[in-house]
Length: 479
Image (cartoon, rainbow, N blue to C red):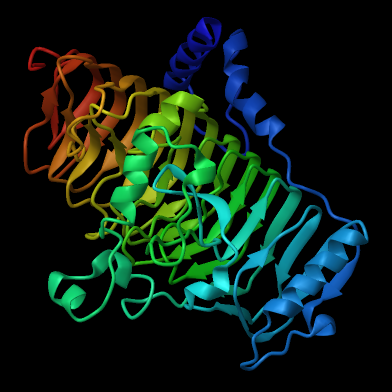
């Protein structure tokens, strides 16, 4: 691991002298370490499927109002048993409960194909092994789910509509005290989220964390769990119950040219790889009700006991519109996050709060190491262009204190036209944020001065804020 850390630092030094990044990061002459990111790209391969098509309409799925859950299930099983291929959803509107993908199956939505998912929780039974906010449990199935499968895909130009709203799934998050009195339910009821957190923090085995009916915990939209070789390409996803694309404990994941639209959805994150390795997100458009991309690795005890990080993540050529963060890491990062490369992305909206957002607290543990951003163009954000926060929701008294190590954050060619802060770091003296370098970057229309608390070694090289070049080394304000 030490050698890997040196190689990533060498990579950043090369980036300072490199202008553009296209399909691959440009080579840097006579520097062997520059191959690291390219090796990640080379290792990520899209799954290949046999040239066989299985139309869901041949297995009982009918467009126009009938429940097609069984038709989808039969088509997927037939495709899997025959050795694989495409399960095709033709033009039309199809209503379904949970869809479970199997190995070597590509669920392909043709142009103008729409799958509208039920909002009845009973249609997502039986319970499956899943995660809720970084905690392992047995809960309602995600809308599209795969468990321990190899070579799976969701492709095409169709629409996946979760139909979530405050009248159904979202109420479990947004329910007010008055609505509770009227008979509605909330995830904050004692037998729901608080019970799950208590079981997780006290080490109750996952097999005994049985939730679902009567517990009011929403599921993710798309979740490959312990899967390998995953492609999600072309589709538009709207109205999720909560997180939209949420691969967990999976490897070799490609999310390409998708549109993830969840503005107004509580916890409507776009793409949240959790404890995943070798992930490529490219060409995606995000207009989300929470973070556009949030890289995670488990919450508190679940994360740091398993110790499985998210690593080797590449995000490029994406467009982030509304959201709490364009690129976020955390807050469920207790297994650690490392080797994150983000480049050639555009972000802008009065409803986008931050461009880079790293969030944790004194109970999370874990680490965030080796994060690289370059050629990021930001029109405007409402809060900080770059925000690192080690004090995020510290409301868990009684837990063991485990500070997160956050270090080696490198940012180059970052342009932001409007923000409240250029850089806002809210670190802690017990475990300061270390080694943040910002190079060749420009921040305009910034309303407030940088905040550098609980930091060591924050460097600015050729950085302009509101037309003024700031000091080459500025860590004297660290507290």
